[in-house]
Length: 295
Image 1 (cartoon, rainbow, N blue to C red):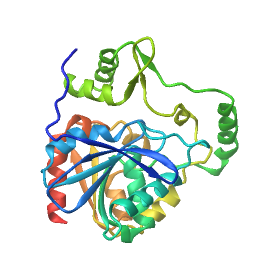
Image 2 (tube, one colour):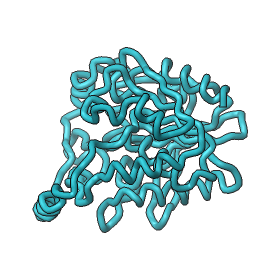
Image 3 (cartoon, rainbow, N blue to C red):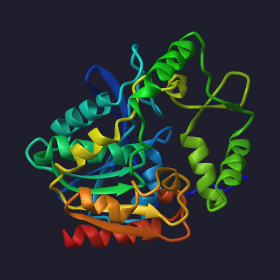
């Protein structure tokens, strides 16, 4: 497999320090004045929004940070706590859009960060595209002792991210897991998700500590309280073949989310699973362009 995706819009790679940590940032310049911030999901990187950026109008300027500990961004010394992503986004918006609310497009974890932030700092967000960012299943307080025990146990073990003998091997794995990926996109993703290692082969980028169980239970009620404070219009994108939505039952369905977020507009992308921006970037771009025009 030697085919590689050729970007239509040339990305620009930068480094910026946010709250004491060096963050890798991918930019796609545009002719318009408004900056759109792209927020990736767990174990993804900002680079893979390339397919979406290529399908969008050249008037849109995009900027996509790698979250702390993901991709080529720096790893914190003390581990990971979800509110830190809100703090990082707040600091980034102060750098990139200090005088105007920003448009946020977030996938999965990035969509959750965007929605929580928009409910916490509604004056800083103009619009949201939330792609498969419907939260996590509910938990109960009785789960806390077991969760803390699991976390303490995992602190004693060193996690590792996978090594692969070649980019092609990893790209083939991505295609087996996601048959909607083209060879060209799979190889592009494999390249930006890895780094070369001594002796040959590649290693998946990111801090292995992301694999630890979270010591803090996900509190759905608190997330919904934040979502009720969102005033920006929200395009809520769900994949027709989402692997994650069924785990939530009714909680993540558009009709339920519309009862919580007042200006929510549902959007279903057909023949797509969770990684919508990798699989169906043209269809996703069409829906986003129409939403941005309307709002």
